[in-house]
Amino acid sequence: MPTVSVKRDLLFEALGQKYTDEEFDELCFEFGLELDEITSEKEILIREQGDEKAEGASDVVLYKIDVPANRYDLLCLEGLVRGLQVFKEKLEAPRYKRVSPANGGEPQRMLITEETASVRPHAVAAVLRNISFNPERYESFIELQEKLHQNICRKRTLVAIGTHDLDTISGPFTYTAKAPGDIRFKPLNQSKEYTATELMTLYKTDSHLRHYLHIIENEPLYPIIYDSNGIVLSMPPIINGDHSKISLNTKNVFIECTATDLTKAKITLDMVVTMFSEYCEEPFTVEEAEVVYPDGRSCVYPDLAYRTETLSGDFINKRVGIDESAESVAQMLTRMCLRSEVSGEGDGIRVEIPPTRPDVIHACDIMEDAAIAYGFNNIVRSTPRTYTVANQLPINKLTELLRQDVAAAGFTEALTFALCSQEDIADKLRKNIAETRAVHISNPKTAEFQVARTSLLPGLLKTVAANRKMPLPLKLFEISDVVLKDETKDVGARNDRRLCAVYYNKSPGFEVIHGLLDRLMQLLDVKAGRNHGYHIQAAEDSTFFPGRCAEVFSCGKSIGHLGVLHPDVISRFELTMPCSAIDIDIEPFL
Image (cartoon, rainbow, N blue to C red; front, side, top):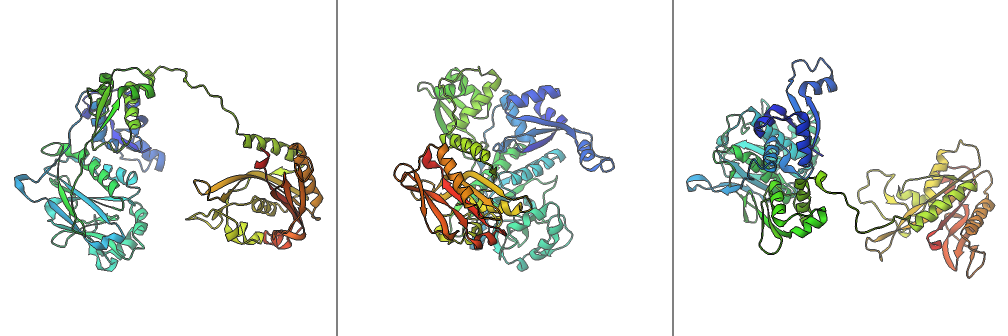
């Protein structure tokens, strides 16, 4: 969950009321938040860097508040105060409006060129006109952008926000992409110009910006935004230009968001403008901007779209476990910034979802807000109408019983990774990878975890190899799932529960493994016999030594193999002594 740090005194001033720490903690809980920590900048520095570094740091009390990850409207002081004020019914939820430029002027335009398609194809923009900043508002404005970058923007990979002093630049703006060597400008807070290539080298040691370099570092073209005079506004998602940087004296802010995900870009832009439009000369109004795509298509932003959902009071009452009238439910939802009214058709409730609430996707999200407004502590505990008794899955019960008895037979249980390398299940077992029906990982992070295992044997042999210095014999077993491709399943694969055991000693010990098979069948109450019991018959398997392999049948169906492993298999797992093994499917015995 994101954590928002706000100055206590500034928060209470904005709320118009002072609270004790306990009272504010309770208010946060009622609103579905959590007051995580009460601290100060000085305390944080003392804890993280020591007393010396903390000298001269501020003693102002900070509240650190945990906010749900999908509530982007609560990531700054402005949104937090607005939400709490509406919740306490001290304020009506504002209506946000997109307006055209004053005096009938043309809106700011951003032209997107086709070169951006390979790096960051989308862009949205808006203008905050006649805004008033002070140090606290300015700091909050910057912090909101950083919180959004870390949250919905996924560390700038999906969206990057750029804010500019509109009075220092002139439209129309051009969003294009160029080779790094062809881009040259003075970046934010630097004293000279750099090429994009030089900037990448410069910021490799920057504690903040180095984390974003990988997003475009290996691209042949870098995204760049120019104004009509060729001045660079920004090189997203890395850095803004110094020329258009905003300050406390900035009155008109041009906001652009470049993105790989257009939906996320629209939400991000809506968040920034709705949170800070209250400081505009005409509060909660945002000046539109036009974005022109390479195909000539034109879109006007920000969306600031309101939408309406209709649901019944009975739906909410049943799922929350309360008994409130439709009027009462509508009032509760209104307190959560969701303007609601009874629709006049039975107990129907018409709910208006504002642009600040992209987290409301389904009726269940509205129901959750109703529960918060009602108060979780006020919901009466009740016994569920549906009475169910939990029970262990039959396959897991069988597994537990077998584990106990195989261990009692002198074998030690091992638990190995469900993922392994292609070599483990193919080359090392003398098999062709195409014949293993293995499920492959599309983007493996390491060569050790490329596929889901199709056999438990490689894991046990690697465990033996890691314990070669232990006294002989080594007797290991594992009962776990393997994964096999299966076109008849809706996900294209299935899990099979297998039992595998190995015996590693100076002699192969085939009789030990055969004895374990007989003991297992005795436990499973399967008699020896060809038709309705179990039997083994000679077979050939590349993993096993020729003439020393048998196929295991139960009720006429093949369930696995046992035998002495091939010397090549033993040597490929870095073992030096004979080894026998059994690998069978236990699901047919359910």
